Image (cartoon, rainbow, N blue to C red; front, side, top):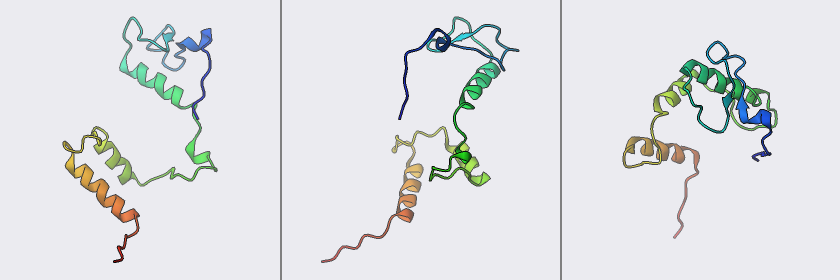
Length: 112
């Protein structure tokens, strides 16, 4: 469920506490700032915001995998730039998806 609320004055800007060595002023949250900021500052600000989310490993009500082997992380990073929706451009990705689907679905028997 997505939570929404009316933005207060403090919600319309991002205070870059840990990116302060790069950025001295608050940045607008809902529009592009007038001036650019260093990529390190942008990373730090976004990373700090994401840290406010819950930790999946501490979520005992979740039935999802929160850890995976390092090889899985490498595969994800190697294929993150592929647009899976474009099946004509990435046919091998489509074939891999189909093979994984077959691994996880029971056989369908057709009785005549």
